[in-house]
Amino acid sequence: MTVRLTLLCAAARAERDVRFADVPLDERALRQAKAIAGTLPTATTLYTAPSQRCTQTAQALGWDAVTEEPALRDIDMGSWHGRTLDEVAASDGPGLVAWMSDPGAAPHGGESVAEVCERVSSWLDGLSGDAGRVLAVVEQAVARAAVIRVLDAPRRSFWNVDVPPLSTIQLTGRDGRWNLRMGAVAGGSL
Image (cartoon, rainbow, N blue to C red; front, side):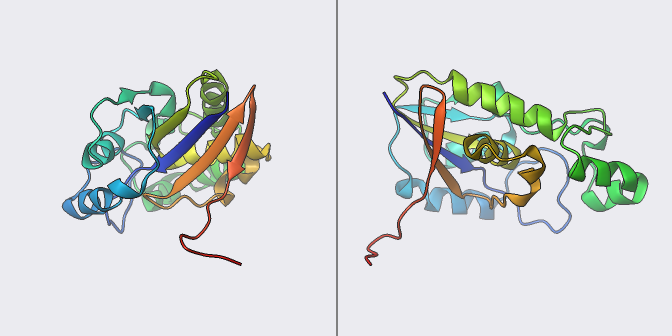
């Protein structure tokens, strides 16, 4: 059977100084998540990453029977956890450059991009062929890693995948082979 997987990137706060941390959603983000609830495909299995923003997004969508999946967790930022990008750039500029240019680098002592890509690949490949339609609220890093896996793109491409909050990525898979499925504009015709 074919697995039809939709990854929904979690809602996000409207903050100027985004931190490498899991922060609760604000009212605006919760409203935005509630607004898209009826637009998502139906699913037989619902997953969420263990973060506040992912579980709060799932709750705002009205999901009841959700499985928290540790493999969908955000990248472990190690010693950079809780800091802003500007703070890290000021205190560990060379480390930040290395982390963003070398998928195997983990100057913060947490996970490297390569490790996140491997974790997400393992989760994708471990989905049962009879899973059917699956919907998961995930972190941006997980969505990026999934696209890298499906396209068999070099891991250095990780930072070239833009994943806005509440965007979806549709994947279809069978026997360890995955495809990226692009959506059509509603009501559009050629």
